[in-house]
Image 1 (spheres, one colour):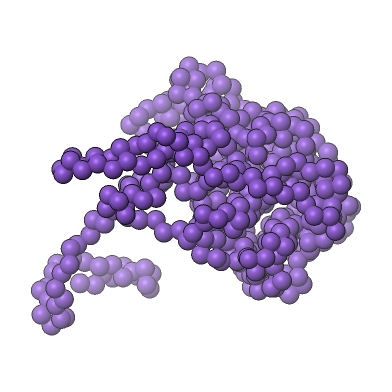
Image 2 (image 1 turned 90 degrees about the vertical axis):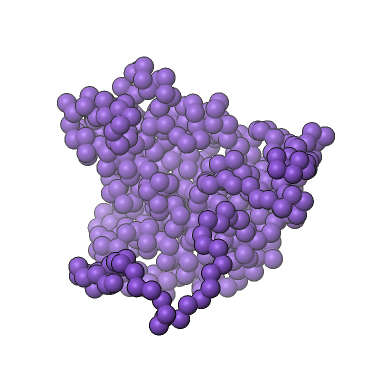
Length: 464
């Protein structure tokens, strides 16, 4: 078997002569810390010796100004609207290649040669099925279970079935685990969907491309031969590529933090799925559809636009603007074209989708949105596309998880191979009580505080 192309792509950040001086205003004592430069992006202050030298921590809720690691996988310039995977622009990848190419790129650092691509496709295809005993796990869930809850459980259980790929010190086992996760995720997600419908579980068809297989697993039935529409398959391919990785977001950071404890890769990705499930992260495209349902009809759009512009109103237009991108989301530009191609191909006349197009027109032309740079983002268009394809809203995050799996595993693999990796241990600013003397229960003073115990039994009682 040919060995995949490998390269040591994680270059240590380069220390430069510049330094950052920290001065204690109370004592006048000063300390200097070096700055580090990556290949692109802002320089960073090396604070690894901050506590040992100055006796202080940094305080950065949400880690908005903190680099937790060095990485060679993805680069984002939010101000310029740039997203690069291993140096390749996201729009070039989405327009010119397929998801398997991007998976190989993220894992190995280079786009594959024809021979490497063929072998990689074969390696992924050989792992697409689920162990039959694992399939029985689905029957333990209620039919109404959220598919993300099922995915967390099933992916976590993979480590109980595949002991030959849980030794994280073995590079070959790490790669086998990566292939298994990428290959099995569409099957796992599709079975969660099929289970909710009470339909039989189809086997993957390894003659199809990855994106074609996703659609077939989701929508095929034993009674009819499923024919994949090439326009829809291209749309699914774009969605998978555009969600493959996005630097140190919440779920990727969760995978890295879990992996830093030497947990097996299946457990780490299950943790990432749980993080992605949050509505502020992977649930954003589902929130777009919920917002459209709240607006209801086109004649109410103007009212909700005014609400969004009112700083005193809590209403926010979901799917517009981005925490990272202060310019146009480069992924949204690709999906915008894909979105219109899908709607045209399917000839759908859906009032909700018509409403979405009305909002898009306003956001792209209204001075308020342009000044605030509140452009439609990737979640806006992906939600519309997935609805047009026939997915229920609770499956949107599942599709996100399928696409993001390769990013999670690439970051996990990079961390495992980095010599500077160590267990994650964030610090805190403690604001609780100082040391107190213990008092036995008989000598404690009575207080008037009320504690509600109704959550225990569903009642309305309270206890003193």
